[in-house]
Image (cartoon, rainbow, N blue to C red):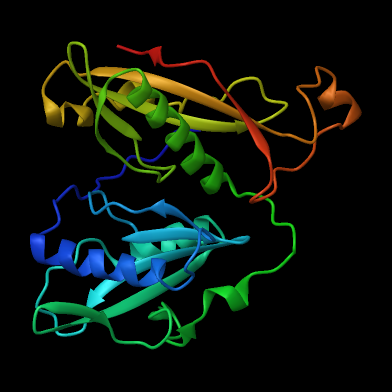
Length: 261
C-alpha cells in the first residue's frame, strides 16, 4: 500500500517562542524533582506536531505551548498535536504561557497543562496506572527513528533534522560524506524479519531535493521484540510472541542504512 505524501512545515521557530518554550519545559521538569519524566521531544526545532512531549509512568503527554496574549508566532497547529497524541494513545495538552516583564510563566496552576479538547486541568501523576499498555505503531516508529538517528550520530555524522510522523517521509536528514542524505525509517514487530519499504519509496526522492539535487536516500528497518522472548524461528507457528508493552523491556534489531540512490 502506498504511503501518503505530505507537505510539512519546516519554518524555524522565532527567538521569542524559544524563550517561551524553554520556560515551559523547565516548569514541567521542576514538577517532579527527580528523574520520573522521560523526555521524548525536548528541542525547539522543526517540524512541529507537538512542542514538548514526555513519558511519565505508562502515560504519554504531548504539549503545545501557547502565548495567551498572541504576541508570539507559535509554530505548528492544534490539529498536529491531536494527531500525534491520538497516534500514540497519549494525552494532548495545551500549556498557556504569559510574559510578565522579562519572564515567561504558565497561566494554569500546578503543572500548567490543560486538556487540548476539554480545557480542563491535567495532573499527569493522577493519570498513571499499573495497566499494561501495548505500544502503538506510532510509538514504535518514533522509537525506531530515535535508534537510527542515534546510530547516525555515533557514526560521526551531523543530524540536520528529523520527525516521527509515520506517514511523512523522510524521517531523518543528515550530512553524509558527500552532502545531504535522507532516511526513510520503518518499524516492524517480531516475528517479521524486516520492515517493509513503502510502495512509493521511489517517488520520495523528488520532494527530498529541497537540500539540493542528487541528495542520497537511505532506508532503515528496525524490528522490535519483547525481552520476554528471544527471536524464536517458529514463533509464527507456535504463537510464542510476547506483546510489546509500553515502558517494559524490548530489544531492537537494526542492521544499518540501506542505500537507495
